[in-house]
Length: 237
Image (cartoon, rainbow, N blue to C red; front, side):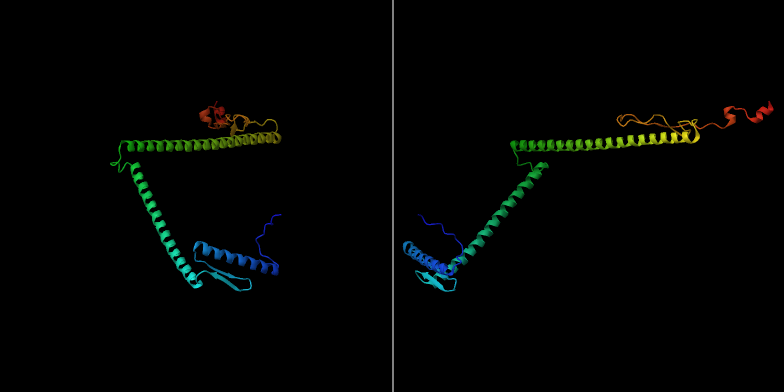
């Protein structure tokens, strides 16, 4: 049977953990020694156990290995800072060139700085302007169409509200007429002498029907202009 897969996690049992540490430490030191001999490498290995005990291995001198490590680390930091500065300088140069190209293209679209362009460049510029104008016109037409549709919708709503108000006014007039009939008798005229509604109730389904309000002509009470004889005239006759 093959060996089972070891779960890489902390061993809770103290004895087992100590035994595993001893075995793995010996194997690690053995590999470090082989690496130094086979590859002619300078190896320094430091291990602290869970109890704080120090174990180390080096094929030269631990002090020289540590000093060399610090020198290499400082050099790496310096090189990293220099490389990062160069990277940002290169990015800044690219951005400046892009800004210059955009400004130059903008001036060309405005009809300026065209002296350095040949016929092909001018043709491309003309095509770009025509395409831009076409897109602007399409956008303008779309906005105007949307506004017209919105105004038509609002107009329809206002028209319906007006029809409802006219119908309500007609119903109120009929109710007033019926109420006067009940109070004064059947001789009450359906159309009062003041304001008269020419058409009846407007049907909500027919939006083209309008309600017309008319004012009745005031009665002429001037006897001289109407020619109606007065009491004084009868006496004279």
